[in-house]
Length: 296
Image 1 (cartoon, rainbow, N blue to C red):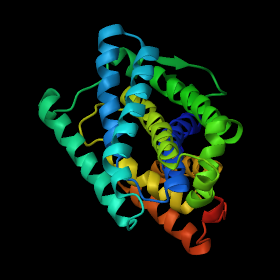
Image 2 (spheres, rainbow, N blue to C red):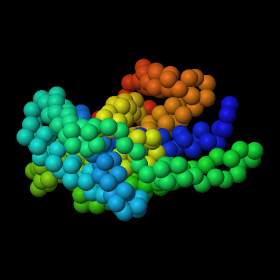
Image 3 (tube, helix red, strand yellow):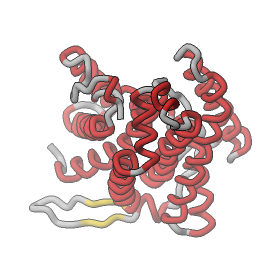
């Protein structure tokens, strides 16, 4: 069975990464009611921003802050350029415009950053380990893995507090229930839409930097598979629910991490998607069964 404790740590790390992206997706879906395909580009761009700051300063904290801030800025930009001009049109149109925005960002990264070649975060942050004894096993955390766990917990808690306890969160929930009713009550729908995408993209920015700390190398398209997994998580866990997105993300992380114990690594994604298909066949509304009308 190998080192089960280490597999558990790897599963937590993978699930935490998925959670940052999936929570952003469910927030966007819950408020804007659209499938948004700009997340992968935000993750990739912020990973490069974090790389540059980390190389210049040697500070993981500053790299994370830079990734989060740049993610928020990109979120505002994509809302202004790709979402707001087509608000109220067929739901497939924002999907196409956000995907087009993402393609532009990916291509700019490919052309202007390292010639589109893969680059690696400094090895000290991806290979430095913290070992501890657990029975007859000696599992470890890398610096990157520890950062993923701590930052994910902090950001999900902070986002939940914002949505549930602040005036911004009340506006977000009002728009999620009904744009028309919220507008009649004085809520600025466009501003709320922008803030929603900003929050979701800040999570994606953090995910980009954290991924850079935990994987071998990044390139302009390294985040695309993660985007589609996040969409799948939102679908099979229950659309529009932050807790459901978190539960689904960790479930997928554990399924993938422990699948490699019994299967070849190349079958990991196949097994994970099969599990999601089975869940949707048994529970079409998702694991937590929340209706779309109760989105946020």
